[in-house]
Image 1 (cartoon, rainbow, N blue to C red):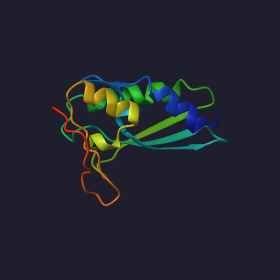
Image 2 (cartoon, rainbow, N blue to C red):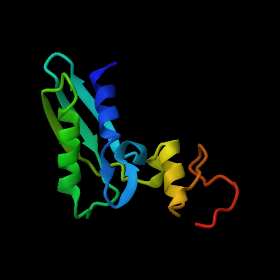
Image 3 (cartoon, rainbow, N blue to C red):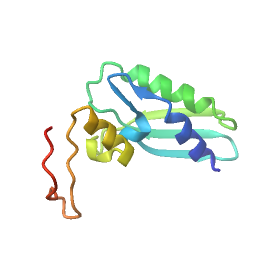
Image 4 (spheres, rainbow, N blue to C red):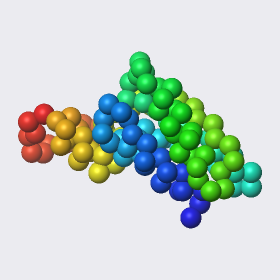
Length: 122
């Protein structure tokens, strides 16, 4: 397994304290690039809102989790805001967890139009 996959697995243990869903399932991790020779990793991620008061804490938790992966020597975490986060970015598991908490996740078709489906109470 590649180091980037190991890091993604480790990041699935990091949670947004305000939403009981891990940051991978929320779709907050946009990319993980690793230099396999040096073990240096760069992670692009976002948060659910730009004004997140615990941004530094989440970023620190991501760094610690990634650094704990065997073979990783250095981690740089960059918060990015494009594209902005949306519940649509979540994995299927993440979407199910969000919906179980009452957060409506739109179901968009390929044209960007909300697809017809069962009405949800959220």
